[in-house]
Amino acid sequence: MNNPWLEIPISDYESHMSLPTVDQAVMTATELSRVLSQFTPESVAVIGCAGGNGFDAIPASTKRVVGVDINHSYIARAAERYEQRIPGLEFHVADVQSDHLPFEPVELIYASLVLEYVSLPESLDNLARVCLPGGRLVTLLQQPSTTMTALTPSPYNTIQSLNKIMRLVPSSECAGYAASAGFTLESEKSLTIKSGKSFLVQVYYRQ
Image (tube, rainbow, N blue to C red; front, side):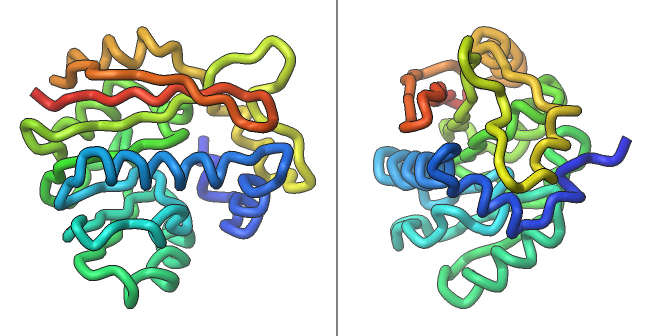
C-alpha cells in the first residue's frame, strides 16, 4: 500500500491544519518553540516537518536544524521558505519507520503528530540512533475522544485518506517502546485546544 502522506498536497495539509475547527498548526509550532526555549539545544531534528511549521521561531542559539519528512514536496516547500533564512539548516526525505535516518545525531528530536502513523518499535529505534546521549525526544500524541473523530472533517478530502493508517497511540505503549529504545520518560503534560481535542506532550531523556 502506498503511504497516503505521499498523495496529500502540502496546500491541503497546511490549510486543513490551520482551520479553526482543527487548530493544530499553532499548537505544534508553539510546542516546538517552548521546548527549544526550555532545553536550549544546539541541534534539533523536526520529524514530519512538512512545510516548516514553527521554523520561523527557531532561536539563534540552535545552531543546527534538521527537517525530516516522508514527502519530498513538503521538504521542497520547507527548503524554499527557510534555506536562506536559517543557518545550519538541512533537509532529508525519509520514512522514520523504515529508512536509515541520514544525519548526524542531534541534542533534541521533536516528533509532533507523527507516531500515530508509523510502527512504534522501528521508529523509536531509528530515532534513538540519531539522538545524542543526554539528549531528548519530545513527542506530541493525539488523545482519544468520545465525541470527536480522530481526523476532523474538512473541505480537504485528501486528508481523510489518512484514516487508513492513523492509530491513536496509548501513552503507556509509547513509553514502553521508547524505554526499549533507550529513552526514559522524564515528564508529560496534557494540552486541550479550542476544538476540544486533547494531546499529550511527552519528554524522554536519551540514556
